[in-house]
Length: 214
Ligand SMILES: O=P(O)(O)OC[C@H]1O[C@H](OP(=O)(O)OP(=O)(O)O)[C@H](O)[C@@H]1O
Ligand SMILES: O=c1cc[nH]c(=O)[nH]1
Ligand SMILES: [Mg+2]
Image 1 (cartoon, protein in one colour):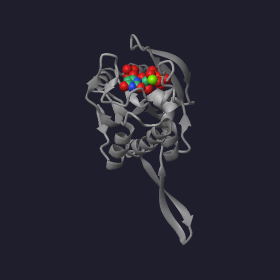
Image 2 (spheres, protein in one colour):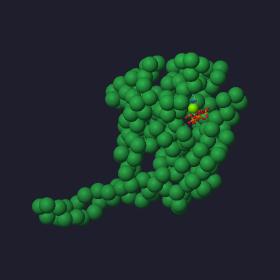
Image 3 (cartoon, protein in one colour):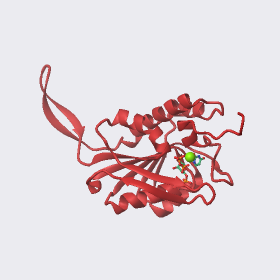
Image 4 (cartoon, helix red, strand yellow):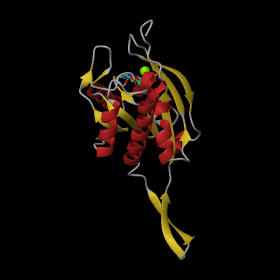
């Protein structure tokens, strides 16, 4: 299975900023999008191009454009929405297939509650975006859904991935590709990634539950 930990200095720097406990919603959201753009750059490195003749300012010349399969971005609700702007900055013409999968906080089992895919999924490259790949229950459910719709070329972009989740997705769907800014150490007893980022959805949307009177 192709697993790429993208250790570019810009990505490492931005991810380091995201790990600060006291980061604001505004900063976290901006950085999630910026890292997503850089991961997109890496994940699309192998797209095929085709030559075409155009008329340039100084006469005819050959340029290259992306060939064949069109891209659909697949943000997993809700935290995946935090990466969507950065991916769209890189691929403004992409279609977007929104998927809702929620991890049960007690059982850690994924529950699918929404699915609105682009047309002709069999002809598209799917770029799944979600900040966290933890147990991989959410990712396995999403890939199952995309394959059921006919999609055969699937890549996943994550800010942070846990070794346990990578092993699980490799066992279930070895044909997909994973791009992540970091492969972290492990999961804790609650299924959170260590050192990780904490609850990425809460940080992107500012929904952290505070104790009374705080
Ligand atoms: O690999 P897993 O163990 O399945 O966990 C990862 C999932 O958990 C988080 O979402 P969550 O379900 O908390 O929803 P949210 O986006 O609304 O925060 C995260 O964004 C992933 O989707
Ligand atoms: O560490 C984790 C695991 C799942 N979801 C998160 O937001 N963070
Ligand atoms: Mg969450």
